[in-house]
Figure 1 (cartoon, rainbow, N blue to C red):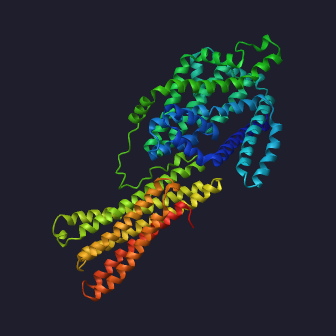
Figure 2: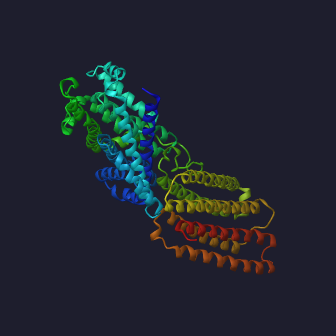
Figure 3: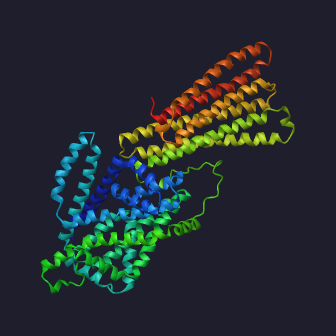
Length: 578
């Protein structure tokens, strides 16, 4: 075998993998947001969940994309884990469409048809408006060109006549159960190594179609590929949150269980599939004419695709009735991490291991920003509590002094958390923006970067207020008079209302949000600040309190007004205003 043929084989595999990736990403750009809404709306029970997972995966040609969306919905509370498991089962059926595309590419010489598709693709890309369709055509063309080149390379290599290869496969007893297990293991290892089930499926189709690899061993490789792809996702989920790890384990359980039961009916099941396709399992090369044998072998790629579909459909039909039991099992195996989620810096939704679909990773970031926003309102609530603790001069003499210091330390910790959250989310969005994204998604990322910057400023404003309260509490200045406390509490109540409106927007849909409510609260805060500023000068002149107390008082009022500005900036960024 010449070095040129080896490079041709590797190059065509690379072309196939790149085409698959490009095609999937283009489909996600075209349908990403709509698919998210479909997933959220159509998973009312296990059967609609399974159908949704199947249709979405068939649409975007990526079970990983479907799994990512599903896990993020579980984290957001839009789906239960049980519904997510049904979607993942459907995704396993949907992903078998890839095998059918590949079997068509292996059975017919379609390389000449890809060149007009390339030409159409480049025209659509330059038209801008239809560039995602052009990207899809390019991806599909690369996939089919890779398959066609792989098929021709397999023919050039004469694998069916290669004595070394034939003797290697002949060394395994075709009737032995151990042989099936060996090829099952090989399929899993190959998939894990190349990180592409499509590439392993293509290699299996080439080996089987050339007559080098018997169909039973070929199907054992395909079964191993099913397990290998779940090992990859489980390793990726190790650094992820609890729900992501449970979803990955459910995916692995589904495939491992399927492989176990299929081993008990291995040959009858394969013979049944071969009967459907019209492939003669018992045909020997020596007993028939070469043309008849080759025509029979050409059906092998369809046998592999049909088995892949039949296996996943049958497995889903068996396991869909036991989803509650699977849910209990994965929850029993993977316990939630024991951390104080409020007071520990930990990203809940962004998981590095699952960022395989850039277009859909934006959803993860949005959920993380929503969590960030809620955390900032909790921080503001602590500032209000700190003010209450500082309101009595006797606090220093009783046990409440300890409570004050404890709460101030907690606010200080939250300020550090807000800084870290801004940096980590920005870093994640930066890594997502390195990929080829749609204009809509690029705009969303720009808006998100503005949102996290303003949210971090809210954290700074809260910390500044806490420091001002602490300075007054620990200093020699007089305490605020009753009227000042009433004004500060009223200003803080308005500020809290603005934060509540902001979080309502972050949780809900933009279309149903009344932005005028946020603007009205902001105007109210500004007017109240101006009123208190004027009144403060009058009160100091009338010697109701000292200038130093008035300064601290206005520092708190001004910080509340600034915080209100930051809230409006978050709302505007979320709604795409300015």
